[in-house]
Structures are given as C-alpha cells and as structure tokens.
Image 1 (spheres, rainbow, N blue to C red):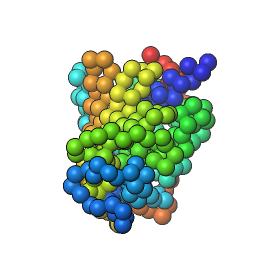
Image 2: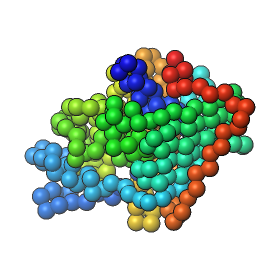
Image 3: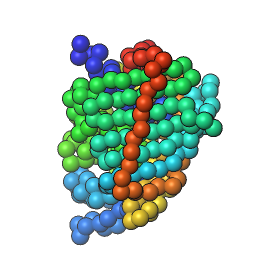
Image 4: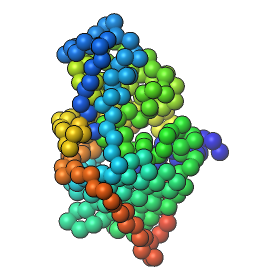
Length: 265
C-alpha cells in the first residue's frame, strides 16, 4: 500500500509538469565573488540563498510552453494564476482552450478536451509521503525558481564545483541545487525519482526584476527516463500581482473520470 501511494506522489509531480523565479544578497561574513569560495559554510550559503526567496500573495502570468519528447513537438500557451502556497490554477490553449488544472493542498483537478477525460484526486497523502509543506508549494517552487526542499529544514552536503555552490540533500527527496556564487540565485536543481528510475532537471535563466521581485523569465525542464528525454521549455511574460484572483473550474458532465495511476501506466 505504501509503495502504491508513493508512486502516486511522484506521478502527481511528473504529470503536473507535463500537463502544462531572485536578487542575491550578502552578509558581512560573505564576500561577493564570481566563483564559489572554498571556506564558506553551508549555513551561510543557505542563509544568503533564502534571502532571494520569491514571495507573493497573488500572482498571474502568461507562459509560452514548448514540449518535445522526440516523437511529438507542441507549442502551448498557458495562463497561470496562484495564491501563494494555497492554490495553483492553469489553463492551456492551442488557439482554443484545451485543458485546465486546479490544485489546492487537498485536491488535484484536471480535465482535457481531446479525450474528454478528467482527474479529481485527494492530495493529503502526497504531503505526508513526500514530507512537503504543501503540494502547491512544491510545484510553485519548481515553476518560480525555488528549491523543492526548504533549505532551512533540509539536510545538505556540499559538493565541490568550480562554478557553483552545489548542495545535495542527504534525506528526503533526492535533490541537487546549483546556486550562483555572486547572486545566490538558484540556477539549476536536479531531482532523482528512484521509483520511476528517472531524473528531472530544472534550469532557471534570465532573471529579471518585476515590481521589486526577482524572477526567472525562462525555465528549461528535462525529464530523463532510460534512453528517453522529454524537454519542456517555459517562457514567462506579463507577470502581475493582482489584489484578487478567481480560479474557475467546471468539469463537463459527459467527461470520463480517470486516475493518476492510469496515466503513469
């Protein structure tokens, strides 16, 4: 039973990605450098990197998505709305709307118009099994350039690298972070998924300042399983932070309900 739920937790992360950001600060103890400093403590790297965390109340954005798995190439426009750590909503279009996702920390709802299928599943077990603050926080961090594991709560080892501060988790989700030594912004994170024998890499590029908030304008995602590589490129535009947001989601009555387990198979 535990194995099945764990597979579902990872399936949730992978499917959410397929279906569909930080100015560095210094302390008195840290000297700004273009290259990593050998003597800097892990605690100082974490302290300075956490200062770049991107926070908001409400967020709205338009995303250009390029998908390529070697057999199929697609371009999609994604409308994204989020209430920090609570709700994530996405609507995908290819000239006309084709799919929607609504995710809270309790539920994951998705439907697509081609096959007329939908998913509606509880997510409470996902948080427990993956030791997450929230499922929404997980996907939000992935999309906006923050570590999937809270830097303060994780157990980290430093891997020597000539260009980045590289931190690798020793417990929980198997994550490796590549942190810019000058800005302390996250430039890459890699997540290994043992049960799927796969590796997901996120590259964060072209950070820019919007309303005092520093976010990446591009996220390059690669999912590697065996000899197969799936690439998803996200290009952000039209960031804004409205006072109020709505998250419309109504599933047509003639759609067929499926599960995440069915998709992963």
